[in-house]
Length: 250
Image (cartoon, rainbow, N blue to C red; front, side, top):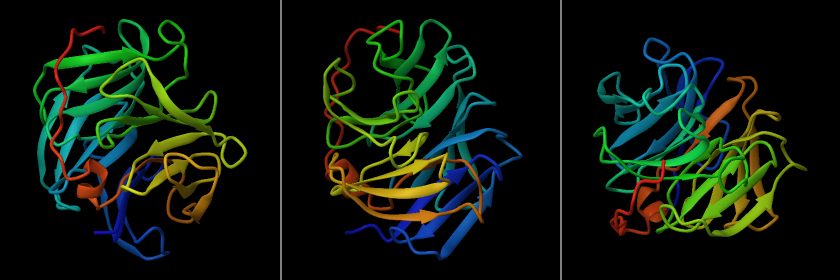
């Protein structure tokens, strides 16, 4: 199926939003989550529930549906994160998340077991003390690879696997928005969000230079920090995660 609704989240109003299509101006639903998280950082639809995270509470959250008021689960990652938690996703088995400020070594891509156990299965340091690629402002999962974005070099990245040190491709979007804050994958194109322009963007492929469409959301919220797609099967390519655990390098 194609995307019919676009989940996204905003930092200012602390809400989860459900935007019609990719992207009409119609708002289908929204949910205020300020009672549990004051710095809403990222969102992903897992096919049944809504995964989100926050950099203030330093937690992974599992919200029922799109969106009921029921919080099904949460997991504190404060032992790992120092307040820079920015991204979360789901790979059909485990929970990728990202932080600009982990306890041990700065900007990391992380893989948390399940939804959610306390076990970290693997990690990759992508900041200045590791691969020196970028900070990381959001993360997703795409057909065995890891899309993520960074706000220092203003780029979208496609990291091989979960997580090898190989960057398969990247694209600078600084000419469009100087703070890419959210990223996902719909099987064909790349939804992402930008904090400077307060817009949702749809980038062709992974990643051509073509912007297929965009939507200004500044009258609804400011600082859109995460974006997803309701076409979870296409994002995952209809397959279970083929991840094989390796040594944790965090």
